[in-house]
Image 1 (spheres, rainbow, N blue to C red):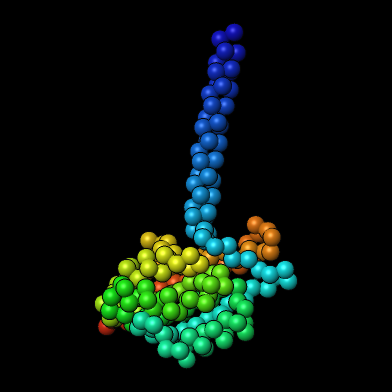
Image 2 (tube, rainbow, N blue to C red):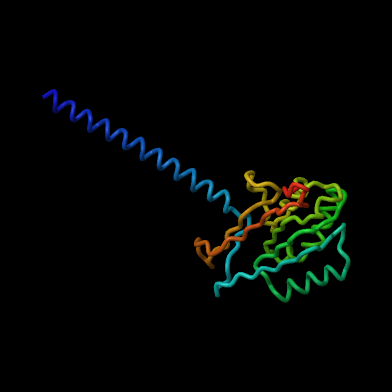
Amino acid sequence: MAKKLRFIILIIFLLLIGLLVMNLVLDVLQIEQETKNDILYSKVRLECDENGKFKVLILADVHANGTLPDDVKNNIETLVNKEQPNLVIFTGDNTICNSPLKVKEALQSMVELIEKLEIPWCHVYGNHDDESGVSKEVQQKIYESFKYCVSKTDSEELTGVGNYVLPVYKHNSNEILSLVWCLDSGTYLEKNDSLKH
């Protein structure tokens, strides 16, 4: 009888250990899923069209300092209207402003039509964006204040500001077809070849 009781206690003990391990595994999986959801979050959903196409318009080196000149605004308007992109990416040297107010004014001028058409847009920084005295951290908050800007402050593990991943979904589905990686590549190389941010 004592042997049988010890066997039953051992089975119960092993079952309890199994339940604890299973709960730990489920907790880890839940944390991984929550982390994945946080990383792949976008305040505006990026989705392919019905034909599975996703068009990106890249605009580089705008160098905006307040309101854009008419010819630059016209060029942006022409490209956006002609290409009808699903996403617009500004790929650095976007602004050269010496105050947060000027950064806001420059961005409003750059994205006026894009925002009006409700097209998601994002950015990365170039080597000139913070040379006029407004830090990337301050600029990032201004960028993120726009309704259709999907740029975000994300990874603390990477150096720089505005490192993030944007999921692109299949049309009318939760299946992720592609990822758009946006990374701050730094400003200039130092003598020791490390990136300066």
